[in-house]
Structure formats: C-alpha cells, structure tokens
Image (cartoon, rainbow, N blue to C red):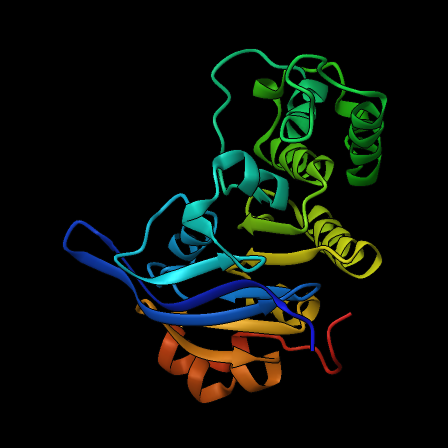
Length: 254
C-alpha cells in the first residue's frame, strides 16, 4: 500500500474560542486525487490551512510525508506542497511571467538566482496551463479568472509532490472550469502529483475526483467515492437541498 503523504490524527482547530475542526482524522496517500466538499462554514479552507502549517491545531498531529508539519520551515513546506489560494491580492505591478516564476523560489539558489532548469520549469508551466497569451501583462489588470489560471501556473512551476487548491474554479467560466479540472487530472495521472482541492461544485467534484471527503460542522461526515458519499439522504441532510440538483457521473471519475 502507498505510504500516506498527508496525515491528520485527531486534529482540532479553533479560532479563539470557536472550534472550526473537531477531531479530524484523515490519511491521503501519495498519488491520490481528493476533493474536500461541504457547505459554507464546514471547515474546508481551515483544513487546508492546517495541512500547510499556516494554522496550528489546538490538539492532534499533522504530518507531511511522515514529518510533523510544525517541525518544517516554510521553505521545506513549499518544496513539498504547492498551494493555490481561493483569492490573492497583488500589492504591486507584476508581470504574469514574474508571478509564475515565484513558484521556483523554493528551489532557486539564493545567491545565483534562477537556473536554466528553473526557467524551463516556468516556461513549461505557462504552456501547460495555457496562459502564454497573458505574458507581459500586469497580473493586477487581469480578470479574476485569468488571475486564477496564473496562480495555478505558479503552483505547477513549483513542481511539488502535493498540490493543494482552495476553490480553483470559483472565478472561471465553464470552459475554463473543465480545462482546469482536466489539468489536475493530468498532473495527477501523468506526473503522480497528489491533488487535494476544495470544491463547492459537487458535480465537478464527483466527475473528476475518485475520492470525496465531506465535511459538515467541522467533522468528516463521509469519505469515499462519489456514489457512496453523495447519497440522496446525505445531500439533503448536509446541504439542505434535493439530490436532483446534483448530477453524479454514471461511471467512475476520469
């Protein structure tokens, strides 16, 4: 069996006195493709922040590739895990290619700067995500959807074992939503990248991810394939809507 690359053991996270995650235990193997789903306020983004070491649990332990995440510095985490946030503000003028190049900082020699291998990784990421037509533009002037694709390219350039995304399709139109999901599948299946994504669109999650982890009120309510997790009763109980509003794929995810 493949060793876990991300492990959470009885993790509880709180903001001051408000518990957001409670006793979450989760193991994700290297090479898996996992979608975190659930209603607003369920703790999905908080779970990502805890995984990446940005939030320290009140109790429990989180390990990244077997190492407690709190023992890793930010550079160590960045070499192992690339993160695409749900929203990012750029405080000053930065060309698209310069934003993507930030993905190579964990690998660059601090004295010598970018090597030929880094420049090649940046060019490959720009081509793979399909943002070449945006090169030369100020990233602040892009649409939210275009900016989201640039951030995905940054993460691809980072070449980390684990790719974590918080609502990667939120600002994308339908064509780019499907394109982004197909890119994640390709990174996972061709490159072996472990992909963990928070998604609100249950139909996209069910179609493109073999494993869904459903959070509800800070706890794992279900974990498994879409057909087992998104049952009519569970959709009604957790999301408060009729299951007919959710389209599940007839076959296994692509």
